[in-house]
Image (tube, rainbow, N blue to C red; front, side, top):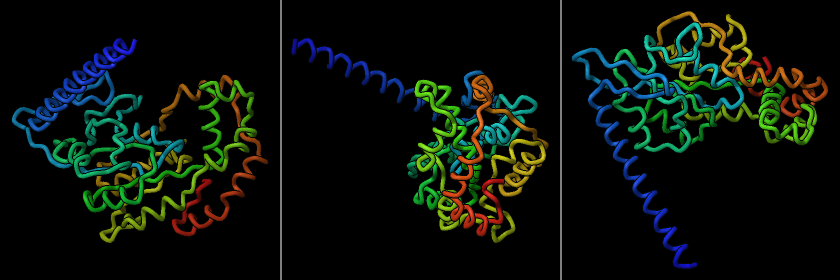
Length: 307
């Protein structure tokens, strides 16, 4: 029995080693093709970048726009607005300015020079001169400092959302996965159980960004930090203002955008289980818990977290 187990383990190890070797070869070949230009890099399985015009093999370091946070705050919606084509906003916009890199590179999670070089340096080729890292994870202090040092023209986008709405979004996900249904939890019961863990200190993220050198109004008149409220993304005027702010900061071309329903599946689930809402008493409790921090945020930015 011991011999059989050892043989099985050895076989599994060999299979994994061969798979890793083949993957490394494929990645090496992909990087070689990338340096040569005209690389069909996949963002979504059905979409590939068109080949570069004949004779154009010049690539350069991408100008980076990245999300400093964004979980349950509209990161998927805004990524679609920035990178996808109207009117459906379902596919990468081949006429836009963003490279078709993966939506969530998460380079700002655990950063290193190698990670930056692999993801952004010498990758972009005109007209695609921007790269969007729409990772909704919170950026660490060291990561933010790294961005400022390695990519001084990077633009950070910070999301804010009503704490009550964010909790409801977590509840909808839990309901869709069956967790809340199995336990029979109502939105209010879920919120009262999880509000300390699942609500968010926006002031802390803002302070980390400011300490790292990002600014709502840069010395040359161009911001390196843009704050986007999830409430903005729900109407056409708000989403246009969000795009215009980011375009002004990053130097994107002006264009008209529309409201995007990025999580239609979740919206339909939400409707099927009774269009759940959070009762006013629970929302008041959550708001009171964060009242001091929200006041500090508004004092620093002139922006309302709840708005």
